[in-house]
Length: 283
Picture 1 (cartoon, one colour):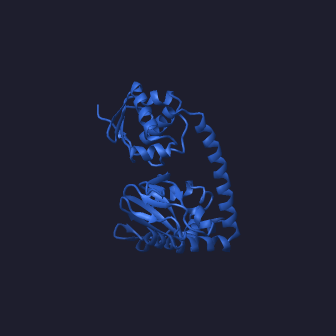
Picture 2 (cartoon, rainbow, N blue to C red):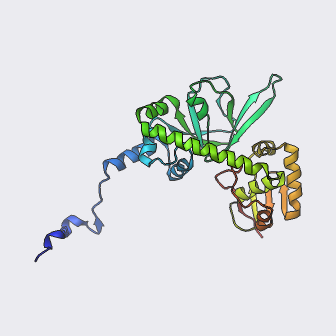
Picture 3 (cartoon, rainbow, N blue to C red):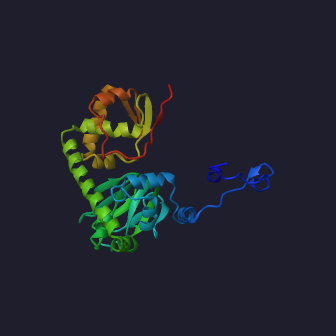
């Protein structure tokens, strides 16, 4: 019959089955490489999704990411682990998958001055790496954390070898800088109470209440991340009691998510973490 050659004949039953099981397809080279990379680095599906949202890796395919991260690895760090110290050579940078990290300096009086706090889905120390200099600050985990560690030499070598990689990174970082400027402008018109409400909404990660959440950081660090003094943060939390927000240590109960949204905190904020830590309150 004409056209019969376009159709493949079915495999004989003896080849198709062994008892009731189908013959397994052997993975291709690309799949084998991806699996070896996963086993070596410890990257999982959620990690890939976080990386794809980072400005540094936006627009890259998974194979491109594997190439750029050929010598990187995922590592767990306990609370208060020092990742690097100020004035040490900048030999690696990091992506936070779980936990929180603070950047700080020590003053001449020996006191700690927190420069920044980084949440899951954020990277840090890449500027020092690209500058080929020393770390301008120190870094420490503030809770048990899971981080991607990226060696500087390997990453920069990949950028030098592939102009497309370098141009993509430059474009992504430029877009990120423009977004940061816009975010700073938006934050400048928000009150401290609105910023705290916005932070709690992102932690809650739900559309309606009631909900109970846990503050992932010391209140002084949260205040630093939100660009305010610790006493301002405490006063803002107190003002939110009128909207059904109750605090007990690190636990925060929100009686009505909608009330916080109506305060003007509907838009997503760079001041809140990428991974939710909220759970439904009972009753």
